Image (cartoon, rainbow, N blue to C red; front, side):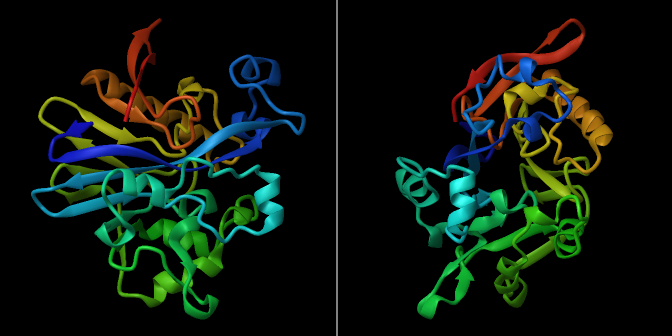
Length: 283
């Protein structure tokens, strides 16, 4: 999809599964299971979705999030039924005629392991090294500090040993708050899911495309009260979702989902006075 200066495409790093009750929080299982069936272990299917945005005029290739990576242990891989058959970052980049060395900028929404697990990979002798060695890595300062000192509630969601190669490098760019990172690319900051979650918003003269990440992980989470149990401030998530959806409804914007296995993105419509799903959008 073309959005202003950028050609934007969806990449799926992996398919995996999580506990349905955790994904939908206080929503009763009979409600969410009508929409998304669980397996015998109560898990529902998700994907780890990244975005690639190419500005050919500026020679810039922006990768939004880096997926699960290849450093999960066997127990975690089995627990989450990780499957990369027919998907994966390298395969997705190759389909676009790109490789890891072509990525000029990595935009991390946050540092949870399903979004930032691909930050590093094994180098010579097995030592961890940056998976995108030529890219500047952009992250909110609050997210960086939170990942190093998380709460007991979400400490399990980080792999701090993977942050060291980035910290030692000259490729970490910490930003503070909402700003225009590049022409046509703004950062929207959200605090409901985790501290300093940043959502890229690509704009042109008429409309926009926003990567909703873990604020709205699937199209089912467009329902205001359908909020993940992992969110650290669910009431704030509720308000942030309303704002993001109202803005998308206003200019027929596209909302991209970080984890939806059924669709990459959608447009909205007004239903009973509220923004709601209208149609899926291919990326």
